Length: 147
Image (cartoon, rainbow, N blue to C red; front, side):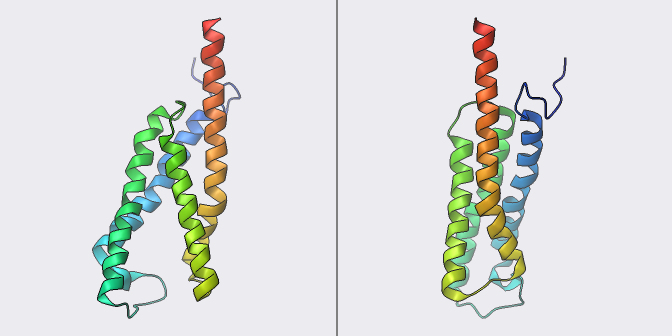
């Protein structure tokens, strides 16, 4: 019998897998674009960054690019109690905190980055809690099967 994606018996495991797979495309695509195009393609028009800033921007973008595959790697195993997914999502949350620090010091960014900040600071804790629920449900099912 196939579980419904939001069935209480699995905590929404399938829906979480779909959401994670879709969400992982964002950092992967933006990271890859940032590596190739550099900082001149950023929303708000071409900017006058220094060669050092462009170098650092492209370097940091490799980490965004890596987030997607790490999450995709965890999608089939989302019900396992592994620290990989929560650590990755927590890192994205911390990146949102860094954006918030920039916002405080340099001013409000382009609306695209306001949205990214919201996704990082609000969305990641929600996904982490959802993941915990799925893991807890899977553990309960396994323990029930053992008794």
